[in-house]
Length: 354
Image (cartoon, rainbow, N blue to C red):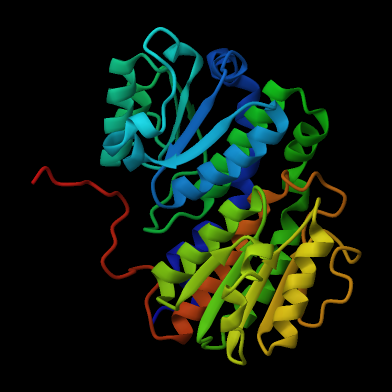
């Protein structure tokens, strides 16, 4: 079996800091049309499939707060199978309801189909991808390309973090949020904090947990869902993601020795959400709290990691992925799985016509 440090997925995740820096830097030369689409929008739809959908959730939640207008995250399939349940603009007002389409490869069947359908319906499209020559990038009205985000691994690592950083920087620019913009520009300096947290994740992955629960609220919920997906697809461990206080409304009954609860907290609501993690620990679960600083983690009884300090809580989101990859890949090896070749998966999903 491949050693941890030799895993392709780990090597690519470990370059996420550079990919994030390149992505944020590239936004200084982004096509003006990208910002214009969002600035003129009355309502924005952000869409993707798999990891890209969870990325869309994090971006949409941040954009709602920063831009102060409706921003909806939906799977690509909803825009194909049930578009009337997503799009509210009429044909004459479609130009004020842009659709942001996220796809690492730019070749995923649903992403290409949505771009084609939105062109017919006259909804402006913004593609976010790692491959500038892809069908999606060619079809969209404007494309943002992560310059160092592309990768060979089947599961997404630096592509997710870098495309997330690009979109957050775009939102900060359109919304005039200088604090968020400045903190995003400073992400490369904070990368060592993600590396330190990843060391904890790697160590925790040496235990074969019976179940893992990831908690995250607001924009962090999309990140929690991505953690869950990484754990599921690489190690097949039963995993769920919840809003922290929603976990308290029923799912907390799964807490017991042998399971791990991870809390991604920071910013508004951190104390209330951290209290849920503490309760999970009292009920027997092992816990790992990832907060911005010691004040947010006050009272924690399990593992703790600090990412972000005084940063805007949403600026640190791209840094939260590397620790997830460390936990998932380490746990996969512990369970005897090959995380570089997750079963039943390929890098690009191409749906058949039958």
